[in-house]
Length: 266
Image (cartoon, rainbow, N blue to C red; front, side):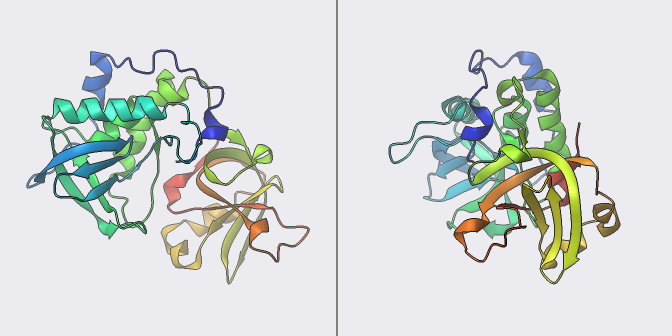
């Protein structure tokens, strides 16, 4: 979440239109495994979260959608459209969905982390991604469906659906706030120390691979990135608020939570 800086220019026209072709395409991604637990949905909270009849809140794995307005803030572009689309998918499934819990069962808010499936067997996160109502995200260890969910997002991006109607990718030099961001830039420096691997983009943003996650990455590939144009995504942090930031250090940091969150630029 946190898309205001990404989606200011995105057109809302046609946000609710999803053709039968899109639906059939989405259903080809991430087919349901056997033996799923079926649960009843009480309500859709937003585009990536549902409340179950048993009281659990479920955060959908691999999907990040725009935030609805809270505490006086306006809805982010496509936030309402994303919620309505998920409501429609749940309704099409008669209010019941298949639940596949993640390897990490809960997030830091206490919500259940899981993949959801409709009665047709379609993965709901992949459908939302294929329809252009959110961004793919990957946070280890819940990365089993990364490849098929990336493919779902790619189909929306190539077709210019939803949030991809106008590119939401932000230049690293234009970051102005913390929150979820898809960012591009040229790698100016790559450094490895006890704090992990640090990849600077245009002296404006540093991507960080934490020491406990280095083993998931191809280190030689990361070290060869200097001078290359890359695209990264994740939750940007303002390091100036923590104190101790040196004059030559970028203010903004983006922790990489999985190799799929860093790609060669298109």
